[in-house]
Image: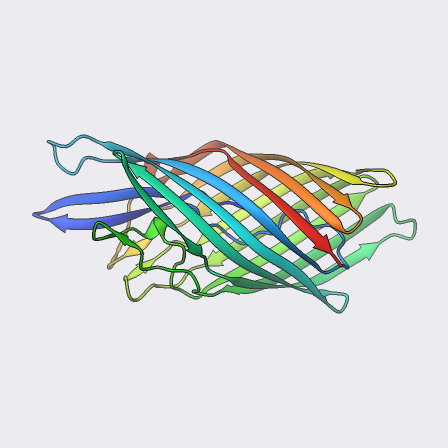
Length: 302
């Protein structure tokens, strides 16, 4: 699960040779999976994510003052995993987005169905020693994001890419996931690269995105519950957005965040909570600051 890439977008307007811009944080991220238990089971679940950004809008002329805005992104996803044989898995994601922007006391709201996606993963390595003290798992695959979300939201005659619930494009994912376990300790490394296509109607393309994570976990369990504390690092990178024949200067960037959380499994149910705290970021040429992120999920295994 998981989630979240801190990026920025810009809406460029040219008038009387003066360049104006609208800078906003953006909630769009790569489609990483996070910590997923009970590898041989199907599951269906719901997860919630929250992220926030503070954006500085440079003055359009020498007579204007810089403006600061705040963007809040929440998402509720219905997601599931289906096993096909012993080595193949399909993941389905159906997101619902809730977006709020506050700039100079003016509130903007947008909400609705986001872009659905399907991800296929295949296990190239799935090995456990005879004593079941250690195991390794290596998965790789890819997926497609469908343009099911709305991309025509306009307020005050202005279309802002960062506050749309969808991108109006068919985008693609490439994922890899590796887990190594020794007794109660586990180490996970995963990456997701998202290849974005051009929105021809708006002549806009989001920058490609890469999210990578390294996590260490420790298993605690008794007769009734299994607890898995998680700690790790998450790196997120985005290239610049492209709009009307030019790259947007206040977009793209890189961030590095710490992750702490826990996973709880009760027989057929799983509950997880994660917090992501950025300690290094350079987003939108320094015009955007991402706040801490939070995610939680509830899953049913069958």
